Picture (cartoon, rainbow, N blue to C red):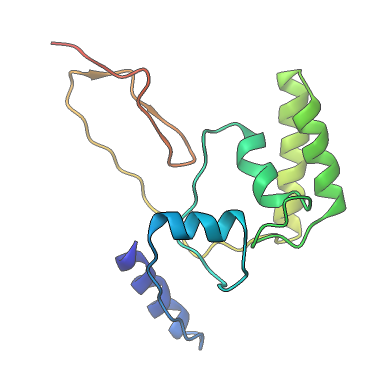
Length: 145
C-alpha cells in the first residue's frame, strides 16, 4: 500500500493537495475505521467480509454507524434498512441498486483510484472465487493432479 499511497500523493500534489502518508499496523487501522476518530481524510484500504451488499454497505454508509466516510443520508438509510430486511433476492438487488445510485448521484465518496487485481494460478487450482470486493474466497479451492 505504501507504493500506492506515494502514487496518489504525487497525483494529488499536481492539483495542489499536500499529502502526509502515515502507514499504520492493520489492527490500528481497523480500530480507526470501526470507531472513527476522524483523524484522517483518505485511506487506501477497505475490508469486507464478502460480497453481500448488507455487509459491504450498511456499516460504511448507514448513518446509525457513523463511519469516518459518512455524514449520513436518510434516503440511503431507508433503502439500506429495507434491503437488510428483505428476503427476496430480486427485491434486495433492487433496493441496493437504488441505494448505490443515490450514493453516486450525491457523491457520498469520491474514489481516487481503483487497484488492478491480477491473480495467476496453475491449471491444477480449481474453483477459486474472486469477489469484486478484493476478498479472496478460498473455501472452494481444490487441487487437481
